[in-house]
Image (cartoon, rainbow, N blue to C red; front, side, top):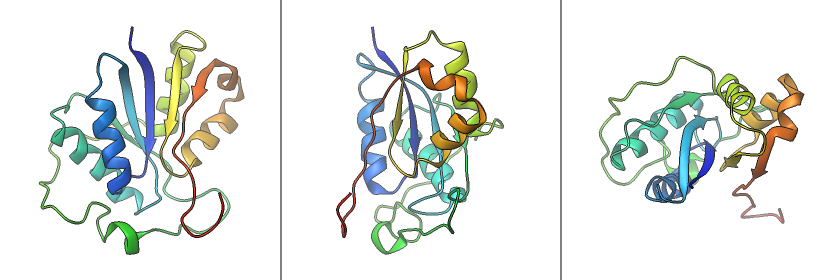
Length: 160
């Protein structure tokens, strides 16, 4: 039985590869949805990039939700110097045609964790943890319902 996951992401190139790998593994992973957060580039681009990657993978049925557009306690610092102006600079990729969901990403995370059996959903944050922290703050009862959190993290210039 595939593991149910929510991918929380700020797609630049590294997140795009992670999303492609997850979507190419349906026997192992059931992607319940992808939640976008501002990070490598602003939210207007991360939600667009998540949809582009889904379409590139042939998975336009995956729901993508826009979330938090800035960190909780500091100004947004983006990484265009690493990922380019769009976050996916390099190949020419068409604009997505699949819709962005109307529900806020935080609401989707909370509703999903409340609906699914406790311990059955893994959160997979690939970027800033703003959506995850906001969901946990808004609905603390979801925290013990999370199966696990598997995240991509670290830092290039400092230990982390």
